[in-house]
Image (cartoon, rainbow, N blue to C red):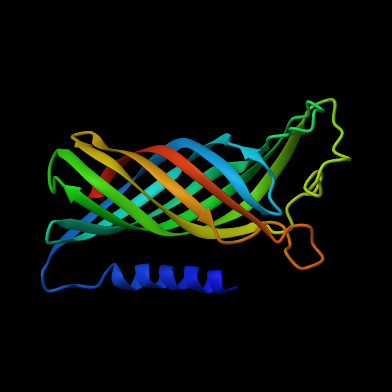
Length: 230
């Protein structure tokens, strides 16, 4: 619950501070909208632990960004997205059975990000960008895939097999950076992000098999934006 309070606090700070006017700022009024797409390299933090590889899945959605000011050399704004995001985990099974297993979990996720940029202010050129803020998600579907010769009876832990998520709502913190190239036909942003989940998708009371089951992933994505208002 403390993690949820922290997430709410960060979100409120973003909403409150983004329109605040500072004496040394140079006002902007730039609204952009576009699309994004890329891949997630995901895993799940389990307690007790499960040996995992990395699961690769797609991520894509829509992006809206508002830049409200330039403070010294830092361009400041806020960015929101609505994305489809595939996460999950892929197990490394070394008990001699030859079994394979992975779980894909599909989310609709909404990050709300503080947007900072350094570099070319107006016109065409290049910027270095940073995005950081809270993210919430909702599980819309999941699927487990296992080998035909499947025998987990002697494996520990094995409570995850056949057990779907207890909680569909997910929240955490996401941040990353990259480069933005501004052209006459729009803005192209190549970015890497890291998501750290603060919530568990399995129940985590003393009677439950896992005390932690939280997502994390590294995302590589390309975003295309065009200006609605400069």
